[in-house]
Length: 369
Image 1: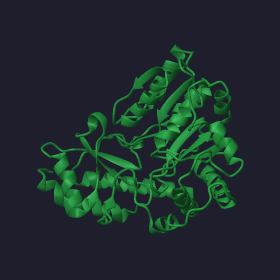
Image 2: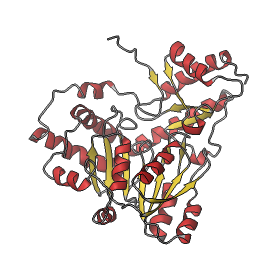
Image 3: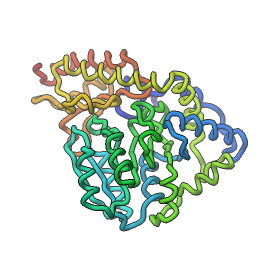
Image 4: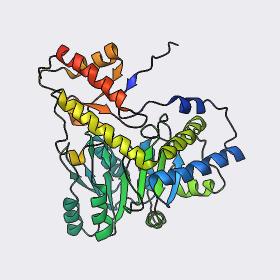
C-alpha cells in the first residue's frame, strides 16, 4: 500500500496528530479488563474533567462525537418530551434530526447561517411554552465558523427556567473556553479527532446531577449508550464494551500535552491563531462568512467563495499543487464557502503556509482581488 505524504491538513477534523501521540498509539495491546487499563482510564477520566472544567461524572465512549450527542439525548429524554432544538448550521441540524429520530416533540428554532443563536429568542420560546423539558444547542458550528453564546443561553435555560441543557461541543471543547460547571451545562459531548489531537473513534461526555435525575425516568431506547452501565463499569476501571485501546494510548499522551501547556494557554493559542487566520484571509481580499468577530470561531474560519471562482478547482489545486487540504462547505452552503481548520496541533506557521498557497492559487482559478 502506498504511503500518503503528510499534508498540511487544515480541515476542522480530523486534525494532524503530533509525532509523540502517534508513537504512544503504537504501544502493544493490553487486557482491557486488566489493571493496566484500569489505571489508564481512571487517569484519563480525571484529566478530562480538568479540560471540561467539571466535577460532574464523565465518560469515555468508543464512538464518534455523534455517539456522545446521542447518549445525551437517550439518557435524559422520553418519546413525546417537548424539546427546543436551536440550529444555525449543518451540525445544529444534525442535533435536531437526532432528537426527532427518537420521537421527541421538537420545536425547531432556525437562526441565520453565519450568525449566532439568540438567547432572547430562546427566552421567548420558553416563556411561550412552559412544557419544554430540554434545550439543545451546538456550541461551535463547524459548518459556518460561528461560536454560539452558550453562556448567555445557559443563563436563560438554566438560570431563568431550570430546563435541561444539552450541548454539542464537538469542535470546541479543549480549544475554546467552555467551563461546564460554571455555565451549568447538563450534558456536554465532544470527540477525539478535533482539539484532542488523536484519531476519530473516541467521544467524551459529562453528566450533571440534574441529568442523572432525568435519566431515572427517561424512556428513550438505549443499550450501547446507556450511561448507567458506563458508570457501573468505570467504578471497576473498565468500559462496558471493548474500548479503542490505541486511541486510549493516544488520549493519555494528548491529555498530558494539553495540561502541561495549560488550558488557558491552549485557549489563548487558538484565539491568536483564529484571529491570524481571519486577518490573513481579509488581507487577500476574501470575505468571511461571519461578519461579527465576536462570534467568529477560533477553531475554523469559513470564507465565501469569490464570484467567478470554482470552489472545487480551488480546493483541488491547494491539495495537489501545494499539499494544503482545506474543507468545502456543508449542507446548503456546500459550494458557497470553503473552510480553514485551525484547531488542535496548530501553529501560525501552518496558517502562513495556507495563506501563501492561496495567494498563488486564487488568481489561477479566477479570483480578481
